Amino acid sequence: MPATPAWPPKSAPRLFVDQQLAEGMTLSLDGPQAHYLSRVMRVGQGDAVILCDNRTGEWLAEVTAAGKRDVTLSLVRQQRPREAVPDFWLCPALLKKDRFDTVLEKATELGVAAIHPVVTHRCVADKLNPERARTIVTEAAEQCARTALPDVHEPVKLEAMLRDWPEDRLLFFADEEGGEPASEAFAFSKFPERGEGLHKAALLVGPEGGFDDAERGAIRSLAQARPISLGPRILRGETAALAGTTLWMGLAGDWADS
Ligand code: SAM
Image (cartoon, rainbow, N blue to C red):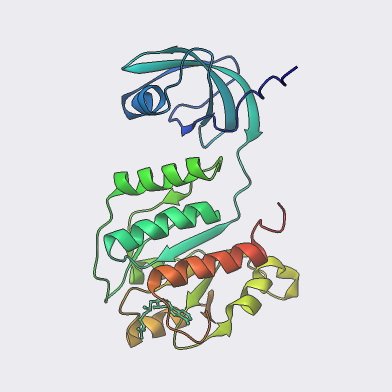
C-alpha cells in the first residue's frame, strides 16, 4: 500500500504577505504573488501554500481557488511562531549595486535582525532602492524559510549614525588596519557577565575604498565601538560583512540553539 504523501509537501511554496494572519482567515492574493502561485508554481484547488506575515509567524494555507489574476486561500493552522531573531544589526557601507544586493540577500539568510546601510566618504554608491531591497530580502527569507524579515533602513551618513548610536548596543568596527580578533570580541557579546554589559551587537564594514583617517578616528572614539580584525587579508566589503556576520551568528547568535 503506497504511503499517502505527506501534506503539506516540503515543496509547498512560501510567501510573505502584508496582511496579519489569523485563525480561520481567508485571503486573496493578486499581482506578482498570484502570478507566481498560479503560473509558476501552478497551484490548484486543495494545494498547500505556506504564508508568513512577519508578525504572528508561519501559517499553512490551502488554495480554494486559483485564477489567472488572483488566488484565494484559507488558513488551515499556524505552524511556527515568528522566530526569535538574534539582536544583530549589520551596518554595511553602500557598495556597487550587485555587490550590495549580495549583502542584502546573504545577510537575510544568515539571520540578521536589521540592515543599516551607511554612506561614508569613499562610498562609490550613495543611494539604495528601498523597494528593490525589500524584494531581495523577502525572496531570501522565503527561500531560507525564515519567519521574520530583517528591517532594511534608509542609508545614513556615518557621522549621523555615530551621533545617534544607541547607548546599549556594541558596534563592532571591522578595521582592516587592525583590532581585536573577531572571534574573541564576539564571544564577549554572548556572555555579558564577562564584563561586557552590552550584548546587543552591530557590525560596521567599510566600502571598496575603506574608511579615511577622520572616519576611523570618529568610529574609534565612540564608547560602544570595538575595533575587530577579520584576519590578515584585506577582504572585499561584501566578504567582510558576510564573514563577520557568519562568525557572530556562530559565536553569539542562534546557530548554537538550532
Ligand atoms: N582599506 C582597504 C584596502 O586597503 O584595500 C579597502 C577596504 S576593504 C575592501 C572594505 C572593508 O572591509 C574595510 O573598510 C573593512 O571594514 C573590511 N575589512 C576588509 N578586510 C578586513 C580585515 N582583515 N579585518 C577587518 N575588516 C576588514
